[in-house]
Structure formats: structure tokens, C-alpha cells
Image (cartoon, rainbow, N blue to C red; front, side, top):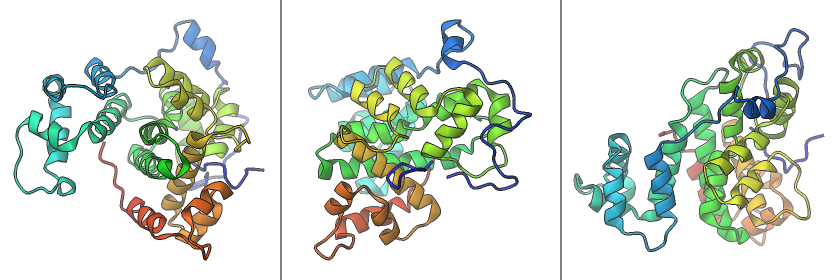
Length: 303
């Protein structure tokens, strides 16, 4: 049985009932062996994005150097300028300078944008996947994780990355084995979390948290991010820390947003230690949690 605090990414058949392992399914591959044998290569992200991510981790980074690096990627530069000119940052005037945009946005918001754009650029037209829905889920989870992190004494930036990347292993599996992806997922509603992992184990021989963690390690994200993603579809354990709580809770929120659950429903589904931090003395959602949940419901895919 799936625990209530396990993140859900919920299989609800649209055209046919899903089977964990249909009799006529394609042969189950061995992902790790395929990588070792060179038959499969993990996706890469643009070198300029890798350089920017590394530079933005430096608290003393020079904004002008960031601007110089951004200017080498016209698409990313345009997104930075669009963000700087958006209503979120006032939108009072048309800003055309990358350096000024970087100064206005700040390194934290810029790092989130760079990571999101760099990762999403690695995945185009994945078999069996509705990418706008996938990235909306990812952005909701990322935002929720980063906002919940301070309440749980977790690092907000690491929590954001965990939320954004926690399901990318599913994209990698479906991109690597398109015949299996089409057979198992085309024609179905979105699948999430533990239920998705169970289906993947039968279809691919490995699940998305394991693949996602492996990929996150190869592209240089901090080890706590990889470790948290690796456990993301497992029931919470006593040994799990604040970052685990932030990600599992964020995944629950993303699933609740997709189902259009009420705030009371999603609050009741949170792990007890998180629920108490998001409730008032009357046991109802506090003002900050209610504001967060309402904001999450307005999230749109922008990648």
C-alpha cells in the first residue's frame, strides 16, 4: 500500500486500464548495463549552462561575468530579460541590458532560471509524456519545496532543485526506450511518484528516482540533491532529513494542484511533522500555507 505521505506523479486511465507488466509489452531492458556498454548516453546540458550554474554557486560571483556568460546564449539571455521586465520585478520600463537585468533579478532567481532552462533544453518531444504538464508539475514542486524549506530547516536552493528535477529520470527512461514509453504511457493520464516507480520497474527494470539521481550526480549537482531524489518515491523513514520532508511534501502539493484538491485535503495529506508547521492553533491551514497553495494553482509552464 502507498503511504499517504508518499509523493504522487497518480495513474488514472484515460483509454484503458493500466497493467504493471502487460503480456505483449516490449522486452525489459537493463539501463545500467546499457550505459556501461555505451548503448545509452545520459542527456547533457549546454556547457554555458553548466558554467553559469557553477559560477552562481559562488556567493562572491561578479555580476558582470555572469552577464558576459549569458550573452553567449541568446535564448537564455532573452528569458533573463523577459523575467527582468515582468510584472514580478515591477515591469516599469523596458530593460535591454543583460548586466542590469542580472543585477535586478539577483543570483538566486537567476540560478533557478538557468537550471530550469538548461535542464528543459535536454528534453524535446518525449514519447508518452505531455511535457507542458510535466514541467508544470516540476515547477509547482520546485516552488513548493523552496517555500516549505525554511519551515523545515532545509536549504531552499537545494529544495528547489530537488523539486524541479525529482522526476527527470522518467523523461530519461522514456527518451531512451521510446517503444516501451509509448506502450506503457501513451493514452494515459499523468503518472506520479510511487505508483509510477512501480510501473517503471516492471517496464524498464529501473525507476525514475534511481535514474534521476544518477543523472543529477553526473551533471554536478550537490550530493544531498541526488540522495534526496533517489529516495523520493519511498515512504518517509525516521532517518530522513529536512530536505526529504521538503521534497515529499512538495510532490504532494504538486499532485494536489493537478487534482484541484482543497487546501484542507492537501494539508491532511502532508506528513505530520510538516502539517503541524503549516497549521494554526485551530489545526487549519495558516495564512502563509494558504497563500502558497493558492499561488501554486496559478503556476504555468514557462520553460
